[in-house]
Amino acid sequence: MGNGEIVEKITQKDDDSWDSVADVPFKTWADEAENKKIKRKEALDSYNAASEAFRMDFNERATGPEQFAEWIASEEDGISEEEIEFEGKKIKVYHLTGHEFLALVHCIDYRGSKADKIIYPEVYKKSKAIRDDPSEWETIASENNPRNVSNGLAKTSSANNISSSLVSNKVPDGHWGDSEKAIYYGFSNLGHRGIIKAGRGDMGVHQGWTSIIEDETDVRTIQTIDEIEASDGANEVAFNRYEEDNGHSLPPSFIYCPNFIETVDDLTDAQKRHAVYFNIPIVILHRNAYDESRK
Picture 1 (cartoon, helix red, strand yellow):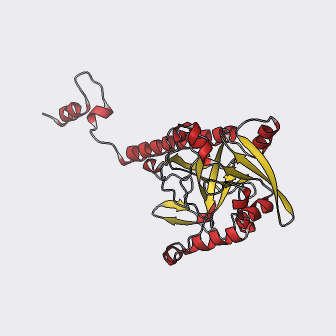
Picture 2 (cartoon, helix red, strand yellow):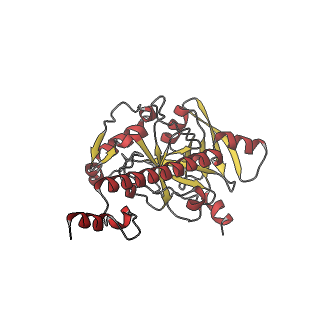
């Protein structure tokens, strides 16, 4: 067989066609890279769509001071109000006793044990500083927030993201410890801040996570509000703390009192101080009213 015949046998099939997929039984490095790039983009697009859908749904459904005032004015059941004074300032206090509501709540706590002070020294110091002085909450994004990269995942310092719990008449218990050391910030509008992760149970949100996706397997879960409310248990929702256009931290809409507060006499000076500083109301959740309504 001559050289010409050999070449013809290799390059031609019986039907004189060439099928590159069938005749090249492996993918090139470029094919693999392009396929990974496509999958990463698809994962990122899906993640961003879920994040934006959650944010828009929350901003549409969440309830805060404006809604509380409207319910009172309409004399709706399941909510009442009273007014107290602290350091010469008046504070509106709303009692939720069965009315529907929905918000995100972030717990500012610091732990008293020596072990926790050693294990989480920066968290301890920052949380204690905010509890003692609410102006500490307003640290802008450019201050004390150096970026760094670890294990290929871009991260920022702990102050850049907020880990919160979705609370509503369907899931009124954030499963926090009853502690007078804690301050609970309630949020009823996120503006344009992005959702980083959301779901039932402990989502294991790293305090420095951003929405950057390095690989399609790195996509973080974002369940819907309805999916989270379908389970009576703990949940976690993480979102960007800072507004991109001005770099300032999201202020709370109200101070939330989840379990251990029954009357205004039970309110701590720290809770009142934060309410006065931000000029926001205090909301006392009467858990028993919701337990009865959900039976």
